Image (tube, rainbow, N blue to C red; front, side, top):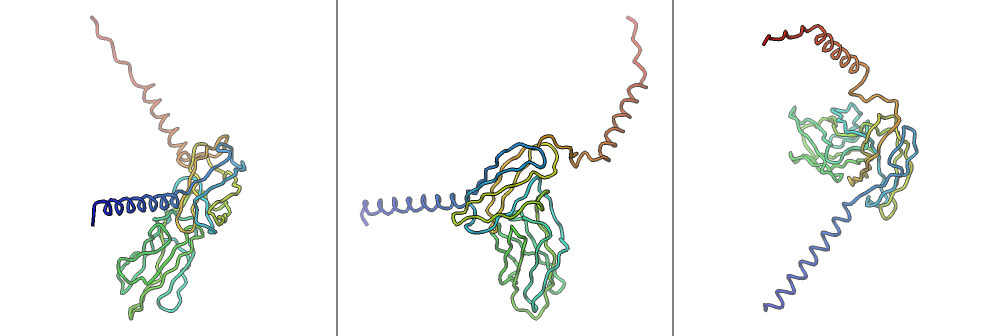
Length: 247
């Protein structure tokens, strides 16, 4: 092979790598726009976005993350190897789903790969999926003379998620819709938009003029802080002054 042919192959390979990287980057670049980005609870907010899976639904979460451990949902069993159910909370943060089960009284854990597929390092899983928008999860196990238990799922979701309708992405992966600012405390929080396959777009919204007290400052917390302040104040009031030393 002469030098010119080798150089041409190298250039073509580099071009293909650049194109592939561009396609992957474009596919992963889900993004949203909120209008307005500031308002009180009850404010109507227009949301738009691009880069989501074509013709798939997206779910919306608002605010901080929250872990759901051993969600007590019904898991339906079909025969001896198929199991499915729907989580009580959603959307689900991609990469956070795990589903514990047993075989011969031994614990195993199935996890998601962040793109809707389930994995099981034990090798007993034949196939499995998780829909991050609806919370639907499903698995089929390999045939075995030993019984599998249905198990329970755990995952991460978002503090405010039940008041928002799911939106349907267009054939090009674009979304449009309207949201209502939930009853949440003042401050900046993240709005999360997650499609069925794990594409995530996010934006910040600042809540103002809210009467809601932040969770860390509930009535009990306020009473504890006030009591501590009162004790400190009384201590310093009762503390005797240090006498001056004569020169």
